[in-house]
Image 1 (spheres, rainbow, N blue to C red):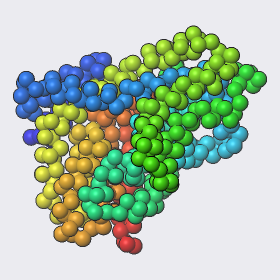
Image 2 (cartoon, rainbow, N blue to C red; image 1 turned 30 degrees about the vertical axis):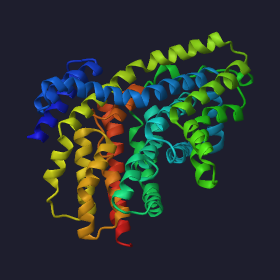
Image 3 (spheres, rainbow, N blue to C red; image 1 turned 135 degrees about the horizontal axis):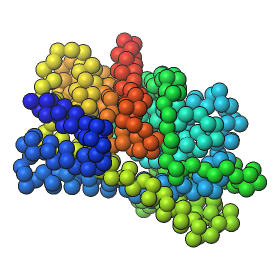
Image 4 (tube, rainbow, N blue to C red; image 1 turned 180 degrees about the vertical axis):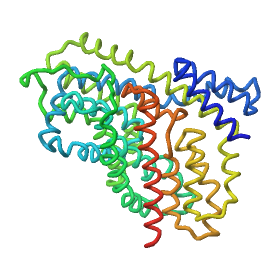
Length: 437
């Protein structure tokens, strides 16, 4: 019955947005409230779940998305985006551009949480798109596939990092196995799959569309690259230093503070305000105008993403994920496949990769002991399953849809299938590696 209710709620959500032309945020509110009542949450507590879901989602994203939009807008308006695109094209050539995007997403995605990496790198994708006139989805999917793989397969991302101690796995071995499986997965779900997406038309957000400037008006290549990638460099530095050097506790605490994604974005934006703004002869008034326009452009994205957070929280508070896990626990199949399957079904129903991974881990932890399954491979199997078929109840689905300005049909055709490819290839990689371990 639980699965039926979830299926009906998701169907109603799709119908409201596509057929009835409801505003997505309004559709999420209506469906979230209805789902909460139908799934047995007390009437007096339904709105508390909705508000908590919205608050938790916005609390972790609003600063990053807004500051990231401001940085992206300045990168576009200053000519830095044009300079970066020119440099990428000169270095790799248009023929190998998709491989360059995959490599960028993979390197940047290892230290960054998915949402942070998305906000930081999507403006770079649009810069390349406007420069090369290639389809936005075709250029963007290889980079986003790499970000997804690192999010689901590799520590220090939340789900794999949390699963390692639960299974008594080795962080180092999990990372090594994850890297081995990640490379072919990225190649297939990224550049190869992107070849099928060339006909999808997309007009990305206007805020990231750079003006075509004369070469002499552009900021320098080093300035453009360093400023645009400064958030990534700061996060890498603050993450690596405590591991590489034995630092005093006070210094470590300050590094933890500076390494917070919101602080990183704020520092990066302040530096960019000078390096791409006032240093290039722009007035503060003009720069602040850019920032105001950027926030207006992402306001709807924030509302839609928060709506997805409300529906996710209702599903969590009503016990949907636990019910699904209990119904699958008794299945007698390969434990690695079972762990993947539990995570995949919870992901499709609930929408959160992290929730799917952690719930599946709680079910599989005792099973590992009795079956002797490799705990490191189990971490990756569950991580892969937790990425399965992202759709309308996942905030990432809506971020991608709104940033790339796509229809739901084209979002499913590109984004959802890419995530499914990542999940399936991850499982195949785990099973193949299991033959040799």
